[in-house]
Picture: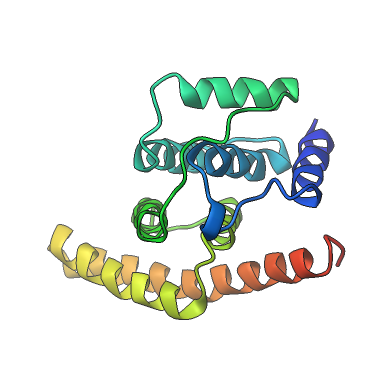
Length: 180
């Protein structure tokens, strides 16, 4: 089953069905992100939290996530959804990133999702660092316990490097036509 999802995702990428900021559409972003999550055949609790936040940030209708999941299972096409502006893309990425770091122990799967969203929304290292700075402020406002803040900020700092590494790997694969 895992190989099937990976093959479907790679096929969509080869046919230009992965999205970029200039042409990002809500349902395409949701679908491609779920497909990234399913590459290993398992939806973890953490991935489910991220996908719930993503669906909310994308302002999907309540039935749309299930419809898209079913379409992925059945290997059928879905509508693209409405286009996403660059500012909305940045906001969506920030919200999903915040949910990920609140966990304070990011898994490789979560990093892969964040790297995918960075690619989808064409968020470069400079933009990512600006988002990280914003998240530092958000974390400080939400949590008064210095130990919690320190732990989350350490996770956030660690994530910048790992997400950056994964992002560069994804970008390299995309520029090489999907081969390593």
